[in-house]
Length: 208
Length: 141
Length: 169
Image (tube, rainbow over all chains, first blue to last red; front, side, top):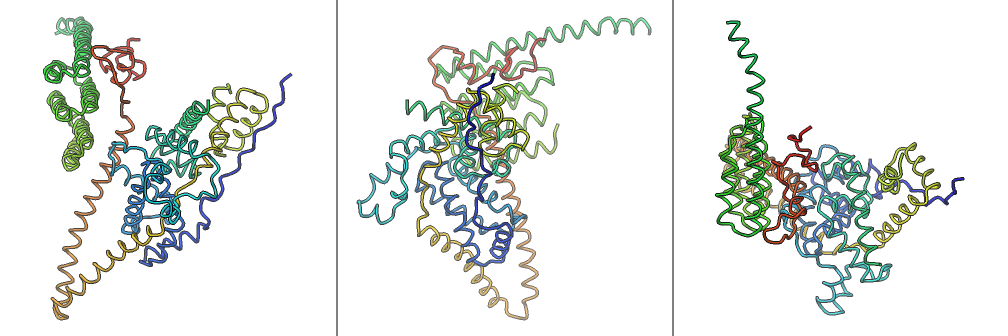
């Protein structure tokens, strides 16, 4: 007789990745296309943090992430009129971010700087507290474990890293990820699985 | 005339056999020479690499086996640039370019040259090679 | 479906990316198979760790920098037009507009073509990158299996990892 196992948590459909409806987004993008800077600022406020963090996961450096995020939004503003479907703004923006990272490094991988490492070596305690990069109040992992997990993600091969970050960290749909990275759905699905297995394995090795 | 036809029919399969024997011989020479080139690269005897790789690229391949030159060019150039031997990688790809006749193969090799240029930050050169590749692709084969 | 096939679907199941029927099948299998259940649980645990990573916060002056750059672009465009108007005067405006229009159109096509070319190169480089052979360090004068895997001999018959077209049947 087969033993009945308790079911694992039933996967929930991905939560809305943005707090804006498709129609509202389309309207905001249209206004930004007409040159309304405040509309573009709304878009920045919706996607700025995601883009910053995506670039950070790819580059491993906060400073680079900020510079490249700035370049991404400026480039997006300049080329907004080339976006045919307003509803695809998110994937279009991620694609620009990805291309900017690639153009910057062209296959050369910069050294990983865990944000906790750079914080401890730069500036006074007061400066750190004045401009916190990560909130101490929402710390759930120990600093060391967080650094290990970040480094494991960072060291993934590029093609796995992109899809891993977009799915596991940013919770984008596989279809959207496939649009951003320009690969087939099947290929993306397979790589996401391999990346997750690799991350799990390496973190497990660390935890012992 | 019928005798000639009969002769041709008889020789046909023989010719194929000779051809495939010839190809097998060429292929195994290339296979062995690839290993020699790799040993030289990994042994850092870079001054000998181009002479050794020329042995491969001067072999006479049938037209339909030309893609192997492209693959070989890619693999060897990558092995060289992994050891920061960028100039050598470019020179090797130039050897491969001399060995292929189809525009399609040349285009792929120019794209590889572009890719290898980006590894050493020579982006303008990369763009030049890439444009050359696209021009050749338009007029392929 | 074998356990191995289920294993490959677990991530998609976790991400709610499977179709309804397939998801039900996986869900049912998880209640019956201890191994897959454990595998799924460990993937979930690992995902929970990822979700606990603290994201970077937006630096307040990042928007200031972006805003200043995009408004510079707009300012440059408008002051340039004013300068042009005063140079040509109202009478010559149609001629000036026509000439400039043509000049911009040709520059635009050149710019567009350059952008297109740049984009095409980027796309190719990304594809090529994904074919990148892994770097390994090898000992001198040794053709190790790892070396052969990293720099495969394209002329070798029966090179199964590369789907060798010369494989002898």
